[in-house]
Length: 214
Length: 212
Image (tube, rainbow over all chains, first blue to last red):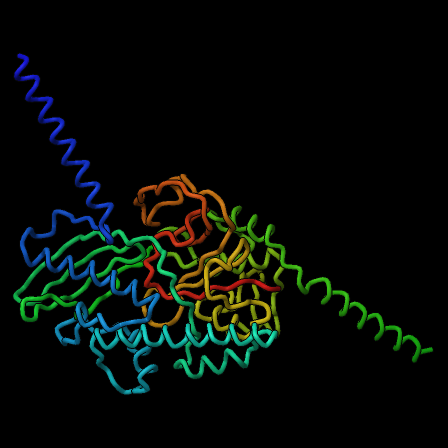
């Protein structure tokens, strides 16, 4: 009777320990992620999820430093990936000044997007410092000059990198040869990413936003 | 006599215009704006056109505009042109609720703001924002804002489940309560949540401090 009772206690403690340890690991991870039952339990699936999570780490860094040199570790230009949305295509046509080009790879797009962000934010930061030094307000003409040099788009502010760590919830993952399709939620968006396997590593080759819910 | 009346009339008009403009300029009342935002965080004011509620609604900028207006930032009616980047208004005309695109569409609103930097100061950090300010976000990655959040000041984050849903019937986990900069927003409707709730740091943003 006592032995059986002790075994039960030991089992309970073990389960509790595993639960607490799992929670601790999830909380310490730079990107918190939750996988659902529709995710295969194999090495490729693991690598694919890691690639997506790592892309958020790199983008978060790039949003504050504007250094996109590591993007080649997670993004790739590959026609097997989903095409850019119509709005993203128009953005690319503007920033590259190639109004007739219909295809841009995902790596090219991501790099261009951050370069545009960097240019506008830095110009606005410099303008603000200049205006303070000259003890004058920023004028419409000041802003208009930056807009014109910024593909006609209004320059945004830099990210300060202290936002919530995105909680990535993977919904589904299917692998067909060297191409994988993953649906996941990153907080404000439900995404469908296409990843391609190149020399043993998985890269994001395209992304479609399925829904917004900020 | 006629000449005297004409001079008197002109003087009265000039005086009236001058007194109105001085009364409005610089009269943005942040407390009133925040109170309005709090009152209508989870509801729609029937005095204005609504851009929906619940799943897939698009009322975020309309809500920010209403809060600004109720804080005392005046409409720019001009020619009542819906498609003007230089006008910003809402009205009921022949029993129909209308507003300019700058009032309700985030990208149009941002273009309007760029025309009036002396009224909306571009700031480089969220730390420069206070209750009554707002910011815009690009969630679709095209360099154009598609969402707006209204800042309601510093305070403790909400612990009300109604503020943590996905707008389509699912509840999200209520985060631990913290003292921080808070926002309200429409679509998904939220009241007194962390300013960057659900916001990856890679989201392009435009911070605006109201200087009216």
